[in-house]
Amino acid sequence: MAAPSLAIPSVRNATPRSTVSARSRTAWLGPLLVIALTALGLVLRLRGLVVPWRDIWIDEAFSIWLAKLPPWQAINVIARVDQHPPLYALLLHLWLLPRDDPWWARLSSVLAGTAAIPVAALLGRAVRGWRLGLVAALLVACSPILVRYSQEVRMYALVSLLVFLSTLLLVYALEGNRRRTWAAFGVVTLLLVYTHNITLFLLPAQALFVLWKARRDHALLRAYVLTMVVVGVLWLPWLPVLIHQARGVVQRFWIAPPTWPSVAPVLLDFVNAFTPNESVIAGHVVPFSAWGNRLLAPLAVLALVGLVAGLRRYGLLFLLTFALPILINLGLSHLRPIFEERVLLYVTTGAIMLLAAGIAAIRWLPLNLLMLAPLIWLNAVSLNNYNLTSKKEAWQPTAAYVAQHAQPGDLILFNATWTQLPFDYYYNRQPASAPALVQHGLPVDLFDRGVLEPPFQQSDIATVAKLTAGRQHVWLLLSHDWYNDPQHLIPPAMGTLFPHVQKHQFNGIQLVYYSR
Image 1 (tube, rainbow, N blue to C red):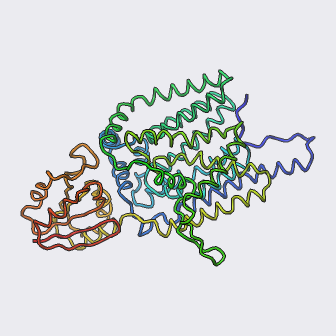
Image 2: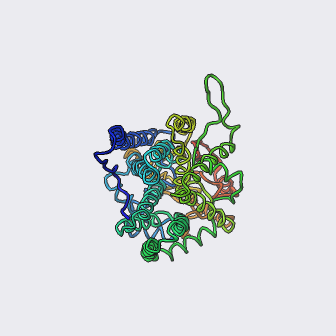
Image 3: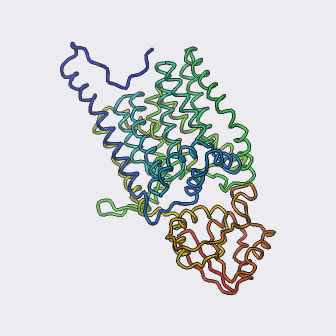
């Protein structure tokens, strides 16, 4: 059985002229619309990419800092203290060789997120034709959550692209059973599991579908099993590191146990995030906040229509791709809470394809547009809300203030050791006249205890007195103290040593100046 072609099949001379004309229009109109939707998605992802209220934040600064290390050193740091595989850091290392300013660093994710749009179109076309492909591409292009994570120097946009690509290649492989297609699927799957550990939850979803799809085709099953054996062998060297990373997560992690009130908004975010509290429609104020989780019901019905319409094809694959990683994540969260939106971002692949299949199941274009209109309008309103209201910690103005007011040799303390990374990222971009500082984390410097985020404890109070001994003034940078200083021990300890205190508030950051 031949692999599905990306081109529209040729038409025999005996085909009626009207049919030839219709297929000819489809042959160029489909790809042209995909290009237009890809351009739209690129514009949406470039809008607000670097704005004053959305600085490089802690996780992004860590990505950049890690990527600028020599590759083997980066792999060593990742293996010791991080929770992710090394591929993204290595790719980002190559990307940042020309420059590492915020716009260029984030552009890598913009391009990965944009590339998912034509892949979604090809996936829809391979499953049910151009109608499904175009609807899927439109939903990916306008997805608020996919736009958001396409604007961060993190691996999540790349993960989403690889999941779309892995799903597309799996469909091609199951339809054609060609060795080169299975090889391509294996390569993309290997890249995926070396980009984010949680994507391992996708593999059982794909395996269950293949077992169902190829239950009577032993040749397909053999090809799939052989491919995954090769992937497993090539991934095996990372297994000891994953076990070490998992132990670190079990010992201490910042995510709270999931509950339905916390899970439901995340499920809704996979379809429409950043919904504003209200909007004006035809001169009337519509309170979106009153809808809340009620939006899940009509969206679930639409997805169910897509599942039923594509059950004999790939509807089950999309359902498993969406639901099974979430269920596995929730199950493991009973041992150690790990349910978090961004690490499960890749399940949007299944959610979007099910919604697109539900819309495309209606073979009447005006009704398709009528069903799409409110969803796209809601996405547009949410994207506008995201661009206007979503803010990060204000590291750039904080660094600028210290550069203007500090004296050479001043000590600056960080209540969370890893907040030094975004501060340094912007402080190193200050004018050459910015004074050199003495920096130290609390309770210890970065990685001194072999963990990324060591908490400040009662026994560490003596360290504060030791670090500040003999100094007339000290800067203290407070951010994320809810996690690294949950007992709020640092400010009182500093207050007993310095009688004069000046506080300066920035978004997400408090800068405190102490003097004797």
